[in-house]
Each structure stands twice: as C-alpha cells, then as structure tokens.
Image (cartoon, rainbow, N blue to C red; front, side):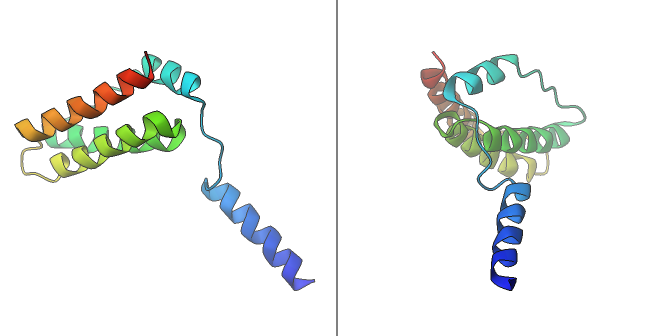
Length: 108
C-alpha cells in the first residue's frame, strides 16, 4: 500500500509545483503577449530586476516557441539587474532585440 501512495504523492507534488502543467498554444501565447501591460517601477536596477522576473514568469506559461526567446531575455535582464546601475550594454540591447525578433517571427 505504501508504493501506490508514494506514487500518488509524487504525481500530486509534480502537478502542484507546475511540472507538467500545460502551456499555452502558440496562438494563445501570442495573444497573451500582445495584451501584456506589465510596467516596471523604481530605479533602473529595480526595473531590470522586475523585468527579469516578469520575463521568467511569462516564459514558464507560454508555448516553447516563444518561451525560449523570452527565457533568454530573462537571463539577459538578470545580468543587467546585477550591474550597479541596471543599465544594458549595447551587446545586451542587441541580444534582447534579436530575441524579440524571434518572437515576432513566431507571432506574425
């Protein structure tokens, strides 16, 4: 009796933690992104941190086709937030633009 109970507890834990949670379709993801009205507040460093967290949350919800570029954007913004001023370098700005363009290609 212990083995089936352990399996049920494991499955429940995975579902509650978000693992295996269904993601949006590409169409739903693009619609969601077009309606996203997130606006960060505070100084540049605080804004960069908020943007990184927002991108991470969005990447976890949307279809992988748009989630992967958003995850890369979150990673870039985490680095930006880790700087003393929270400002993007020219290279980081170009990387963000490249990922944004990838999303645009999927969400034509």
